[in-house]
Image 1: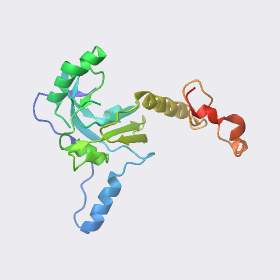
Image 2: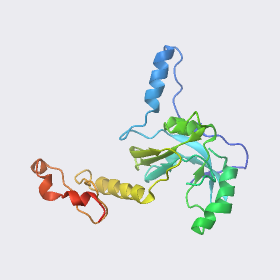
Image 3: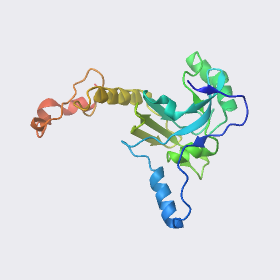
Image 4: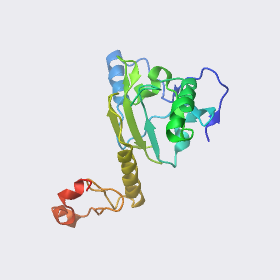
Length: 82
Length: 131
């Protein structure tokens, strides 16, 4: 399912609609913070990211996992102790 | 946070030795903490991601999350229990609910008007705890 890519410098990409610039700065910041708040019962923000998966470098798109349950875990860094 | 190259080294040199095989799920690289920021778990001061864990259902809806600071590890059994509970609720199309302390095999509740004020007859406080 995930697409393999050539070893290189891949970067994660967010799939967010571009914010409109004409809105007042404070309001924009407020809105962004609201958008960033994850809420239960609401859609998980979509993204694409490079990944290491069983011997290969692949690109993973969250939307590819529709139809499955997903546990998305973040952690501080590789080789940390906990 | 780390690159896919570091993920490979961690898998090959440590994790695969812990579990006896390659890590069975994709290890994503979130360079710069973009995805972590989007999910609200990126610690800008420390430049690290905290221990965020999100349960996402087959429709792409967030059903639950937990966030811990770095020194304390997660309880994987509890994560699995929550997935099992959400799967049961989903399979019942919302006609069943899992009370506090539920785990597979334990009693579920069927919310309806008659249950209002009568949960004490159906469920005991001791069931909130592992025996």
